[in-house]
Every structure is written in C-alpha cells, then in structure tokens.
Image (cartoon, rainbow, N blue to C red; front, top):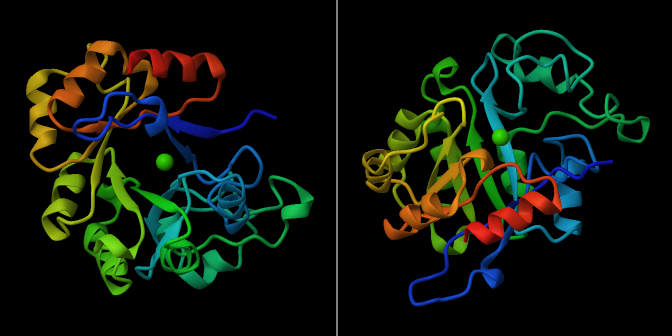
Length: 250
Ligand code: CA
C-alpha cells in the first residue's frame, strides 16, 4: 500500500543554514495510507508514526457544526449519500466512515473539528484546511472560535496552521485571528505558468506558509518564497524520488 504521508520542507529559521533538520512530516488527512482518511484511526496512526503534524479538511453541516471530511459529498468515504451541507450533525454522525477502507475500521465516525482539537492538541501539530469556503459562509469565524475556546491561538495552546485554496478565506482568517499562522494553497491548475513575485508579495502580507502543489516546486520558487520570509510546505509527496526532488529544491 502506498503511504499518503506528505513530506514538507519549511525554510530554516533566521540565521539557520541547513534544511535537513527542519524537514517536517505532515500526515495527509492523517496517516491515510494506513487508516481511513480524516478519522481518529488515521490521526492516532499519525501520532504513533511520529508525524510532526497531521492535515485535515473541515466543512460545515446543515446545522452549522464543523465536520472533518474531504469531499463535499459523503459517498466516497462513508456508507451514506448526499452533500455534507445538506446533512445535520446527527445525520452525519450516524454514517460509518471506516468500513469502506477495511472491515477492521468499521464504526469510525466523521469527527467534528472540536473533537479533533480536544483529542490531539499539544500532542501533534494540526494543519486545518478550510474546504470549499464558498459553500460555507462564516466558516472562518467558526474555526477561529473553536481555536480560541481552547486557547489554541496562543503559543502554548499547541501547534496549529490554517490553510485554504480560497485566498479571500485565508486573508479573512488572518484578520480574525492574526496570531494563528496561515497557509495559502496553490494548485498547478490555477498557476500553470508559475507564481509571480507580485502574487507571492500579496501572500506575504498575511500568510506564513505558501503551500504549492509539488508540481510547481523548483529551486527558484523556493528561493523566492524564502526571500519574502515565508515558509513552504508543498503537497503531496508520495515517493522517495519526489522527496529527494523537494530536498534538492531547498
Ligand atoms: Ca486537504
């Protein structure tokens, strides 16, 4: 089975030279090569495998609860059917989110963001992706509130980063809760010709991380991101060859 762990390479701290010792291992949707994605089973496995962070995807139920699931419909990763936004938390909680992956995972549930924060904060870093924000008006405020209630906007509250492909959302989140680091996700499809200096400078106004598809990563992009004082955590690295290419790119 292919491991879906994501390997990411942030910049060295100011004054630091090397990068090998600053190599972060971020478990994509939890250790999703070993357990059903975005469930406690996958997050427990990420802790057990000593990842630095796990990544998760957050959306909103019909009745306004933050739930951890990747697709906007439940069909692929549960035994249910329909859109996340059309189902209440009670309806979502009835679904089995594990047995599609393997019978030994039957009974896994879609977690709420609050359950995940309560269970893992301080034990492992948590990289929160706000998914499809256009479908969920106000989701930035809700995520910020969940973090604040747990003091996770303070340095001692546990490592957390918030990222999104929606850059209005990342900017807005930064405005609401500026002490929590923000990452902008960049897809290859959105930037087929690469990322301009102007674009990177606009991210530097509020973001801490630029998180491009690994297809966009080369030495020049890494250098330009680091020059702005930003860090880079590309997605999704699945092979040793890709990991080596990221290391070579700096
Ligand atoms: Ca994600």
